[in-house]
Structures are given as structure tokens and as C-alpha cells.
Amino acid sequence: MRIVADTHTHTISSGHAYSTIQENAKEAFANGIQMINMSDHGPAMSGAPFRYHFGNLEIIPDSLYGVRVLKGVELNIMNYSGKVDLDGYYLEKLDLVLASYHDICIKPAAIEEHTAGAIHIISDPYIDVFAHPGNPQFQIDIEKVVKAARDYNKIIEINNQSVVVRRGSEKNCLQIARMCKKYGVRVTTGSDAHISFGIGRFDFVAKLLEEAEMPEELVITTSLGKMEDYLIERRKRIGKPAGRKY
Image (cartoon, rainbow, N blue to C red):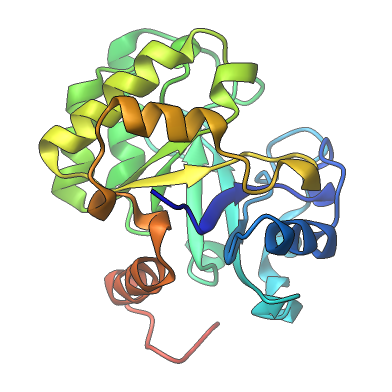
């Protein structure tokens, strides 16, 4: 299975990442990655950019150094009722929106609360991807969350950095992948790179998808066609006319 898109990448704008979008695009091209999503942290994260940053992403070309560049964000989930740190005015302008739990923005609670919060996020029409869901610090009821992704036709992320920075994620990530396979839920692959050298690096992801015997048709990042089809699907869902970027 060949992965050609990396939907979770960070630039220096995140405050604790170390490469520019140009450096990320060049490294993506060198690694055979054809598409990257700019998913810098939302403004509630310490050091992250102000909301105007996300409103001005239109100035970045759609392609850099032969790599398709999506303009996105990794939203911070702020409470267990679905609040995030950017509103629809900004999210409507973006190509691909991720949302995730970070303990700097929300205090871990009980599984029931984590699960309810994830389902609220998945039900939000502006949010496409529930990112690094395997984090044991924010343990979820995996089957309930995957079923919600199925019901709302959303995407679950398999995050390459979870094995490194979210210790204990491996078991959850494998169960998530298997549950996505069971319910026919699409998954995406994110390097979560915070420096250009991590762009398109999917050692953990590849191993996990193989172990889960994940069908390639459910891995949205294995073809640009599947990615572009999803972007059209997103525009229809949020009522954004085709051909209008902003």
C-alpha cells in the first residue's frame, strides 16, 4: 500500500515546529508525497498563530515544488460539548479540518466525556478528521466513536507520531483501525511532522495498517483521486460552491 498524501503536518507557525511550508513541500516531494495538508495548531494552543493566520492561507499557492498543498488546521477541542478554537467563518475557508484533544487546552476526564466530545466533533459539518484518537490520556469508547464517523461520513486519523509522543497508543490505534475496517470507515494518515524531515514518514502507520489488514479502499491517502473526491464532498456538505476557494 503506497501512501501519497500526508494530511497532518506543522510549520513554524505552530510555535513548536521548526520548518516552513516551502521546506515541508520540498521534503514531501523528495519522499514521494504528492499532497500535504497544512494543519498548524489552532489559536488556543500556546505559541500557535492568531485566527487571522487561518483566514489568510489563501495567499499560499495550491501547489509548491510539485506538491499539492491543502490549507487546513488542527483545531483544539475546548470542551466536551464540541467547542473548538475557530468558528465557521474561518473553517468554511479551509480545505481539510482536523480536531484533537490536547491536555494544554482541555483537562482529561472520564471515558464517557471523551467519547461524547469526540462524537460532537465528528457531527460538526466543518470538521473532517478526528485526529490522533488513540491517545490513552483521552481514552474513548472506540466502537461508539467509529460508528459516529460512519454515520456522519467522517474520517479517522492514524497518526504516525502517536507511538512516540502519546505513549500507550499502539493498542488503541490498532483497535481503531480494525473497528474502521469493520464498519467501513475511511482513515487518513498523518505524519504529525513538526520538522520537514518527518513529512511523509509512516513507519508506524504502515505497520499498523498491515497488521489490521486494512483494505486500501478505506485509506483515503493512497490516491490523489480519493483525496480530491473527498474535498468535493466536503464542499457540498458545507454548502461551498465548487470552484470558489473562499
